[in-house]
Length: 200
Image 1 (cartoon, one colour):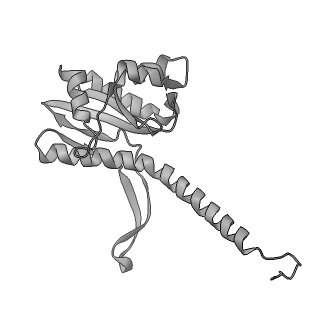
Image 2: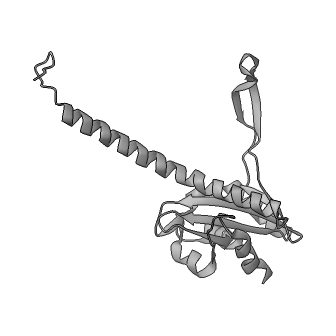
């Protein structure tokens, strides 16, 4: 048996188990962190499908940054930058002659969507879109149920400004929202939900 200088014995099996446990925890953690990114990726792929088919012209809005320093010795690598202004919503574009603007969020909660995930400037922006007769909504993915809902922005604004709680209950999405079908291509049939909510 191998012993360390302090007299403790080396247990190869225990060390292997600890290593496996740490690896498993890391994989679970990375997997959970990636789910929100996967949801965004699904929307981006769906948007590409809608553009290619000439159905809708929706793009992810880039976050404006101010570049401070660039390292040209490494192929114009940005080494220092900051966000120029707060971003508004994730996506915007045109569908059936109407301006579309929406925010996409992922939640791990089974019971509600936390309003802390929304900022004041996003609410102000969506109110301005509605004032101009644009279509504004949220697409919320309930990760635990593998369900995504389209909910009109006005419901979210009302909860944000006048609600007594700090979240929107899951039941509100089921009652007032539209469940978005999921598939292969597009990944999210959210335009079908837009049709049901705003064009039927």
